[in-house]
Image (cartoon, rainbow, N blue to C red; front, top):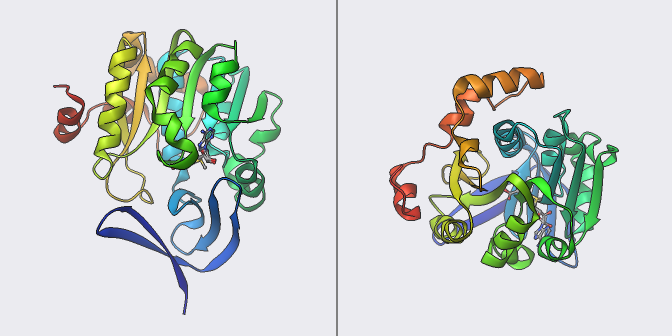
Length: 285
Ligand code: SAM
């Protein structure tokens, strides 16, 4: 009989993946890490009982987290990634030729090492790109001690439990604000909105207290079951999310990239939120 991996994001409901082959399992000093093969999603990484990324659908999450802010900003050179140890986000960020430097701060070195080995399609060499600097540290600790300023800060974290709890706190958002260069933008992993609405609500409160312009955008990632995934967005430049379709189309075509999920129309449409999310974050549009 095939064994299975259960993920329970809320009381009374879970999702189950067949483990066709268990590739690696370890209790790292920080978290319980499992990598397995599943016939529907390919290789799957789970941490502390929560699916992090799968070979089959990772492009949706990583393209949307990287290309939306980079193309909205239009002149991103320095990027800070917090978390993201699988390397998929780093890969997508580095596809932009304008990027001069990416600092990636991951708290658990084992995640990077094991993903390089078992999920090499995620990073595709991005960890060895000369523009990349990897720092093994807590994202909050790093931001509190760096003088460097970034055009874009991406928080590709686990959910707000264990080591990632701090990455959903007001002091962390405030540290991100301080770490941004003028006109910079931050984007955060904010959970599956329907099941984790409190997470969105709490983040909205922090962003509202700190940033001139903030919102959420969304994408449906099949392995993050329960509906659309929310990305938090914050900047002190409101114009960044008010570009016309023509502007985003021009920037996208200049980037010379081909994508599998991202399109300029999806970029703009992703900021249109369902009413239940607008109600939760206290916005009317
Ligand atoms: N895309 C995924 C998702 O939506 O769930 C997240 C993937 S990535 C593997 C998450 C990474 O965040 C993990 O490797 C974890 O070690 C890292 N992480 C958690 N807390 C952190 C912290 N405080 N500082 C830096 N990295 C952290």
